[in-house]
Length: 222
Image 1 (cartoon, helix red, strand yellow):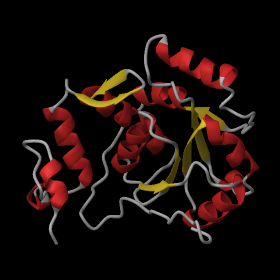
Image 2 (cartoon, helix red, strand yellow; image 1 turned 60 degrees about the vertical axis):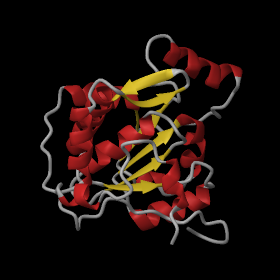
Image 3 (cartoon, one colour; image 1 turned 30 degrees about the horizontal axis):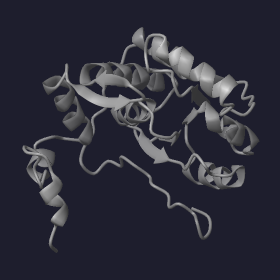
Image 4 (cartoon, one colour; image 1 turned 90 degrees about the vertical axis):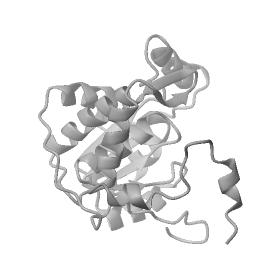
């Protein structure tokens, strides 16, 4: 195969990372090493805000600690229902750090489609953007999930930008339909609690499952 996409790689980006992978026990070790090496560089930029590797690592550590103290153990599934927000890569890193398995769900799924996925995956936690919380509310299976975290799209944008973005999304653009999930925990609350919780990194190896990825389900159930 002629890998024509390699011509678009920036200088310094390898076309093969097999050696890097074999030098680390797990993908978590790769992420940990990158966060240490590039601590003060930007890891992500979104909506005019930026997140450094150091901030990325700290958020992920705190969320992983919260996961552990809610009983998430190695191999437990955590469903993520979000668009491209800072919260998404942070949640992925946190799930992996806690030894969990990332389960991505399409934010545009219907309640029936979510029912099927939740029944199959049997997650211990769901992390969802509030824009889609009304669909989860209508899911018959969400009651079986012990912990649900809900986040506003501006929660991690920092300063006044975050609250302003959430206000506009909720009250001006009306992007957040009314929802009610009584046992849901706000993401910022989970992160704050996680700062004061201990965290014990589980032993991970190459053969451990990292992600359970369902199909889009466009011609049937995922």
